[in-house]
Length: 234
Image (cartoon, rainbow, N blue to C red; front, side, top):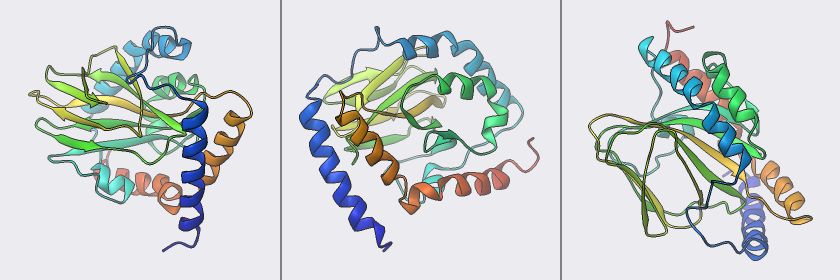
């Protein structure tokens, strides 16, 4: 075990307690209509979709998420992913392939990580809870067949193209793709909005949590897997 892991685990538990105390919002998924950065993401949706379609048309492939993250996520059937942002900064070969997408993501305040998330037909991610209350999850629907849904806090929410879902990762949630084609989203982790001084302490906690070797090594794994699955792709 990395000697930092017990310390980071303790930090996570303390930060989670603080976050839940000072952001008691329980609505999941959270409303998006009045959030400016979500509106900007929707305004860039056509460019984002065009870049994804061009990547697939060129034969672009993504590794399985368990290979990218270094541990299995509990899914059945294939769940593939392509890292775009880690630790708040663009990383890896995909940034050159998706310039409009990366530019759009740069306008999301507090963005910690972002990746392409692709669920194969029939894939199921069982209900689970994430460990980190200091971030919210945002899914932007890019390719969304009928039957692809997210279940969060007991609510079944369909994935929609040109639509977003924002929710607290520490509540029960899971996903399924009952459609006949792959479901593609932009999957983002965003610092949870808090009033000062708790926003400052949470931002520091997220940066310290980024010292975990699993997160630090993700960009290197992403580049290695991209070379393996896309050897002829610029």
